[in-house]
Image 1 (cartoon, one colour):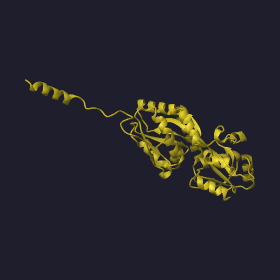
Image 2 (tube, helix red, strand yellow):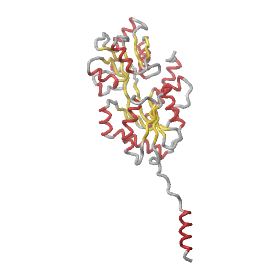
Image 3 (cartoon, one colour):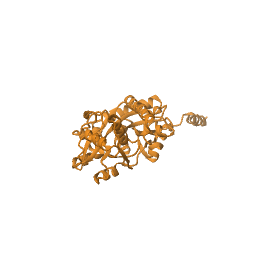
Image 4 (tube, helix red, strand yellow):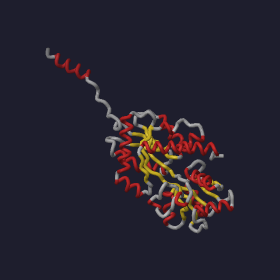
Length: 319
């Protein structure tokens, strides 16, 4: 008789469910696939904003995985093909993540991403040396008309946002520049300062310090309005040229993410975007903010996808 309570207790213990693992997002780190190298713009976005996103996700931690190969294609494919369990997200950029499926066969479509919200937009800029005779976009267009195909413009490569702003200006002004592609912004700046090229095309945050020390002058910035960090530089629109271009960067997740996880992530990104501590941190590292809801981010990506496909149909930018 004395054995029965012991036996009963043993059976109850065996029948009881095992203690479950911690639920999302605390079970394991969330991996964040980034299309740029450590220290690049996409990497900086992820590393600076994610601590503020994590504040809204109790128990969450993030690990950055840099996949810059193939122009970021492997990162974007990794997000698109990941399990929709909330443990993989990615940093996405317009136009970079948009142009790749237009230029070549890839294993993702931007339409399939689960958009979580945009964070920053770094406007493109057109830059010249401080002593250049070109002092406005109108001057640049006039120079291109006087020397068709001879005014050199350095960019970070075909299909980059730097290149697309040049193509946009060519289209609205009816001129042609000589495109000089480089591997990133530093060599553009070096060649601009050494007078090897006439104009450099790169993001406003990348030239801000050179603008302040008087080495370079910005002809225009490509945002819808002036970024406060370069408030003295007029936009392309202000100078009469209907061209907008920048590097729009935010967060996305795989397709078919469960609604509960999707909505929690979207709310966390929105709260981070509104956090005064984040806004101050972004200002310290010269990140031009452009917070967007997931719906607005998705609309921007799809609008750019349609516009870039139309541009490619008229004249492929890699020809």
